[in-house]
Length: 368
Ligand SMILES: [Zn+2]
Ligand SMILES: [Zn+2]
Image 1: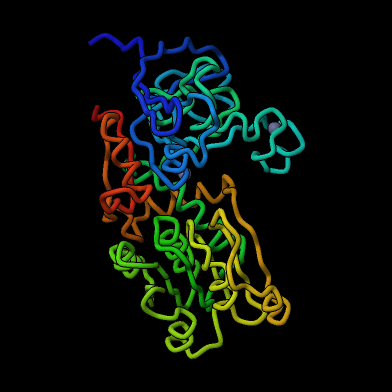
Image 2 (image 1 turned 30 degrees about the vertical axis):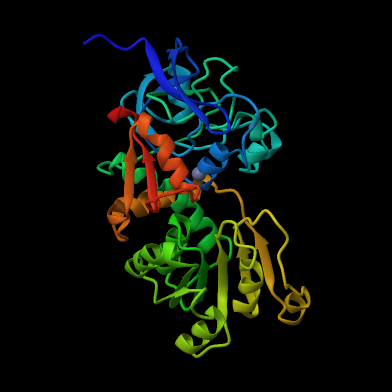
């Protein structure tokens, strides 16, 4: 078998126009590399890009939760990244120059040379060599890439959960300081919510409640129970504040984490669930104002409210270790693996159009 000369990739030319294209594989020099993509996880960002809520206005190869094998690697890149040809790695969405003030602070999201412009799964195909995302057989690794070694024996499809679980660890544990004895409420039962639940339980939380909204969430709430949730509540059937108080005999949660999507009522619910002096981590977005909310509750309860968006390298590493430990049943999540020509209907389902989506959607160019 001769080595391929071209990559196959899905290009999102404009909202809802996802087409397969062929790109010549780039020559790899001393400072860069090439990844053979094994799997790329999908999240809310993917279907928002597809439907146009988050489209950058130029064609690009989506996919930012990528795991694969390093197929070509320059000498200096190997030293900088600490990897070798043939290694299985996960690719962080942001790139970092490792030299500017932001990078030195460990804040790659604000890297002077990179920032949002060079995010993987977002940069346009007009920038050579076009292969900047995971919906492809091959993914270019620029000199500023940040790679995470995947622990020995961890399946690549499972490893793509490094992204949501990294967020779960950062937003559910390191940011609010979750520890033994905490009573936690998690709003939203998607893979991020399940990840927050697992991370909080792993950190020693005494009690975790996970909420969802409506019958489409019921399979996810059942999964939450298998991830250690002590209580699951459908907020369209039951008042989560009353349910939490009844189950714990307490005045509220010491830590509340909101990872909902398009749920305008969740913010007020989160504030109501947080006990006096507690911490409320807001990581969900609602793309509209929050109704029936009185900010005075924040004052009277002396709440600590923390916005959360990014995830650090340490949290991603901890996520890969936790996945490799198999302490939580990520392997048994409802999951759909899609070849390149099956990605579009999966994104539509995840956007809430048509069929009930799996909890975890994964692109597998290898099946194509
Ligand atoms: Zn994502
Ligand atoms: Zn930098």
